[in-house]
Length: 139
Image 1: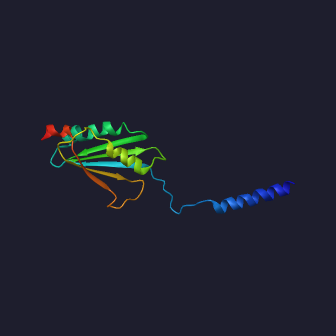
Image 2: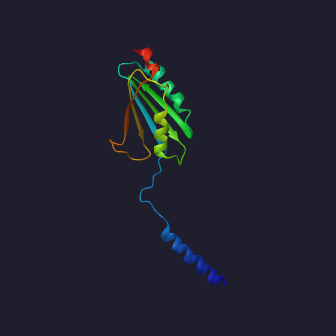
Image 3: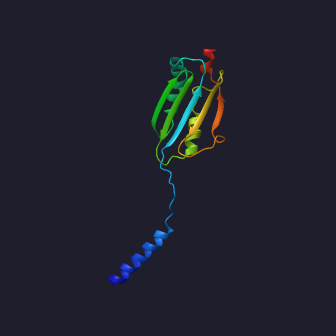
C-alpha cells in the first residue's frame, strides 16, 4: 500500500515536472517608468520648481507607486517611478502619461515615457508634446 502511494506520488511528480513552464531568461526587473522632460535653456532651479515638483506631485497620486526619485539638470528633468511587482508595464506607462500638472498647456514641453522592465524598440517609446497653463507664466 505504501509502495503504491510512493510510486503514484513519484509518477505525478515526474509528469508535473515536464509540464512546468520554464523561461530561458525570466523577467526579474522592477516595473519602472522614466519621465524625461526637456526644457532647454533653463536653470536647474527653474526646471525643478516649474516642471519636476508639479510632475512629482501628480505621479505620487498614481496607485501602486512604491518609489519615486527625480533629478533636475540644466534644461532637463528626469523622474523615475517604480511600481509594485506584478503591475502591468503598459498600465504603469499609461497612468504616468496621464499625470499632468494642468488641464490645458500653453507652452510645449518634450516628454518621453520609457518603461525599463521590458525591452522596447525606439519606435515603441512614446514621445508627446504637452501644453499647460502652468507654463504660460514662463513665456
